[in-house]
Amino acid sequence: MKNRILYAFIAVLFIGVNAGAQTGAPKIGFTSTEYILSLLPAAKEIQKELSDYNDQLSAQMKAKEKTFQEKFAAYQQTANTMTELIKKDKERELQSLEASLRQFQQDAQTSFADKQQKLLEPLLEEIRVAIQKVAEENNFTHILNSSTGGLDVLLYAKEEYDVSNLVLAKLGVQPPSTNN
Image (tube, rainbow, N blue to C red; front, side, top):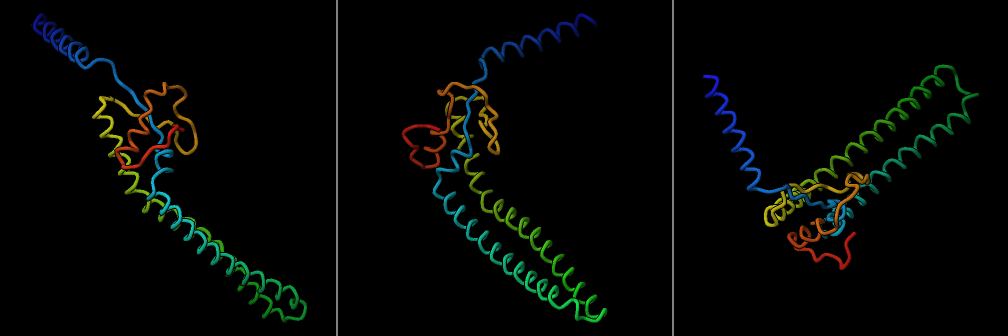
């Protein structure tokens, strides 16, 4: 019985080693999704839309800040002449405006992030599919993203394994003459 288990283990090990030998060493490529994204016309349209949306939110924020500043200045100028009841009412109003201002700022940040994700998600999926096709067509076992959020993740790689221009071509974009 022990011999059968030993033979089965050796057979499984041999099959695994043999399968690994047939596929060869891993072929690892890399790209920068940020670089690819920066060259896509659709990304430029998204950036414009996000910029316009940010401008709208900023204008609304400035209007709220101006209203608060005006009411605060008016309060400061007349605080000495107000009765205690009116003074407390104005202070509550200012506190409410300030809280509303902070809440709007948080909501605006969340709204902007949600809009950015909603707009970029389909484009990032398109890039992911193109990377997958390039990997399959060129027998890459792995494709790494060379940078994430502005941080270099890939510290060294030969340029010949940079598949960025292949991915751009797959997306129908003419790559620039020199790579990033």
